[in-house]
Image (tube, rainbow, N blue to C red):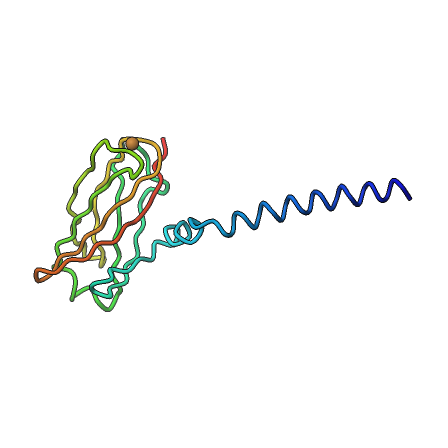
Length: 146
Ligand SMILES: [Cu+2]
């Protein structure tokens, strides 16, 4: 009897620490933004334009040419293919400067920018669309690996 009681206390303690841990994770504010970056679904607010962003290879490799793909909705490629699309790549937690590149339109219905991250860690790509003197920017976070 005594032994059973001790065991159940142990289980209870284990359960409590587990649930405390998982609840602190799920309430973490970064949980939603990291799932958004995994799917790559972003919106250029000023144009109400949904885009799909991915980087190849995934995960991107440092000191290599990686391709950032900015995919337009299939029914809107003609409307947006002449936009000026620029990308600024930086590490938010550091101030070693940024890298600016222009994305080129491809007949596959997407803009592609070549990106060379210089360091392992968390980066963001600020993607700007410009059309008729109006512009809209959205950030795509990614992690570069060795
Ligand atoms: Cu850095």
